[in-house]
Image 1: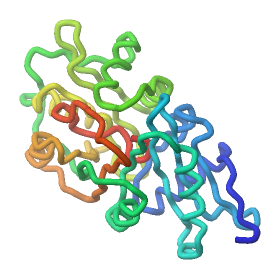
Image 2 (image 1 turned 90 degrees about the vertical axis):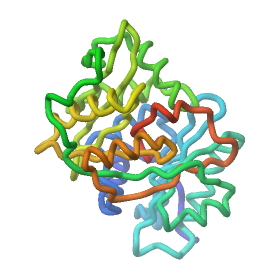
Image 3 (image 1 turned 135 degrees about the vertical axis):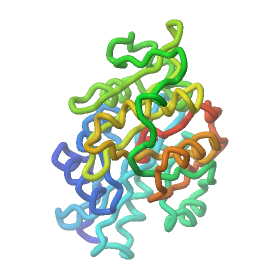
Length: 284
């Protein structure tokens, strides 16, 4: 391991990591790195061999007791040489004492189990142009509004039903970065759904997608898809919510990719019945 060192990621490194994730076929958002950076500025690590970046990982702290591992990549030419595991240990050490979550690709899930992670559910990435038009594009008596017009405290409180810890700085950036659209479903002054769409290298990705019913989820999904070229979108659907799986199938969206949501301890108590699309496979 002579010449190998682990450092925090710079702004240039964050752009590099985005490119690596793109090469892995993960279709990262064009501006995700800006929201990632405010979530936990020290949570992104790069392994360098004689100054050359060869591996990366994110180990992001949320609140006092939760953390999330993501963006775990070793460059193909440097795999199997121990650099990745060194970086993994550094990331896990940064989250020591916390409940830790991650979204593991299929080929790595056995390795994560060896590190103490256990599967909670699978996230199935689906892609397509959602079926249906204006006639079906309603969730009853709800109103779909620009999320930026709502008090941010209401959005943050609503998001806490779906995530184990406060993440206000991340959420503010995630919903408000240029080029994104965030829509909320409101009924009687109460938020009953939230969705965000962002440009990516390939299909625009939607996440999160929260909704009180499948009808509200479908209304948000179709409305968000209007902001994607040709209406082509992708969504990471948790199979822990059978109604989310059924909705994606009914809208004609096709599975393309799969991960497992895994935790090192008890599965957090989340509103899974209203979770139709996870926010991010990288940061939870």
